[in-house]
Image (cartoon, rainbow, N blue to C red; front, side, top):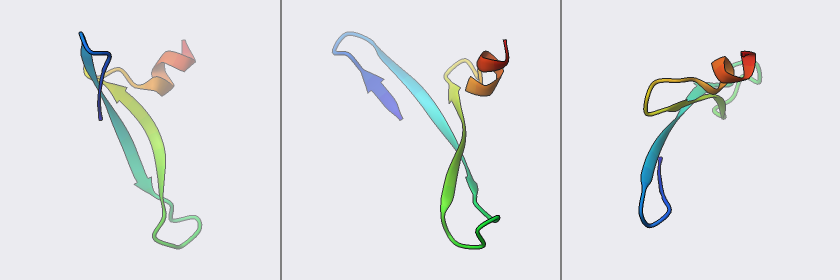
Length: 46
């Protein structure tokens, strides 16, 4: 997904996984990754 404030834009990738625990077709957001490859889970660990 690409966001913009009119002057700048940035891209965030949502990493999804199939929620097999519920044994259905729903997907769950597993992580978020910025354009540099940094994962939100890694940022929060620090």
